[in-house]
Length: 150
Image (tube, rainbow, N blue to C red):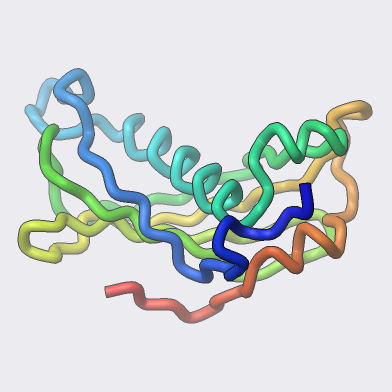
């Protein structure tokens, strides 16, 4: 595999379209906070795949990304079944880490439901320890430090 995105272009801000399932409803009748974290991971994996690094390709090289920390700020409640666009982008790269941001937007009224960020660490799956992010992985992204995907 040449690790190029399917259409040859790098997607800076990836749009992940989905709706939370009915099973995500909590006791307050809206989407449970845990489901947002699950969506962060799904969107990050989809963006990484789209930009040429599916999980299988990373595994072939003995690499993976793991979460160091998540931060989520909620603005509005969300209900299962509502169409959502989750935008995600890479903000920066450091030697072994990369900051990724996210924005949950309800499609019907373009309301921002939540903003989030994840500090990802690049690891060797053989040693299960952080390693420097390879140049070819970094080249698959264009960092967008001040994005507003509205």
